[in-house]
Length: 211
Image (tube, rainbow, N blue to C red):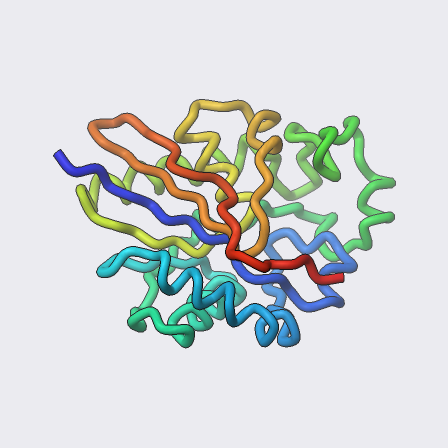
């Protein structure tokens, strides 16, 4: 049997004004300056990803724009299928707040490597376990519907961590231990109901953080 391989890419960095806030699953735009500076990263991904492959993105424009940048860098263009359940964590009424205002509203001690705890559920929003619960069935469905195929999914840091948590049966707290940088590549394989992690947060050479 041939495993189904999933190539998970976190979208490119968002515009500076959005980075001043906790934007969650708000539909914010990518940073044009970063896109222009990251052509080598897009080319690396275009060369690294399997051909052929089925492409997927989320309803948020930043994932479709990232896919378009990879196509422009040399990967044969495809029309990604939209997967609503793989959108970023929804932070409810706290979305759009500055980082300082967001921190002041937290009810639980934050994760050592994250602004909030895995259990923190903002009013009208989700905690990490909620994200894992909506991502898991979709991940299993992709494997069931595309056995032995290669799937490229442009998603978000939160939903990629949720994929890892589902594949490895981890808690939300453990999922937040993974670093998932913009334009990084995470690879999963599934065969006969079992999962294997190929790589996490594989970064294109020369990728530097934006201020």
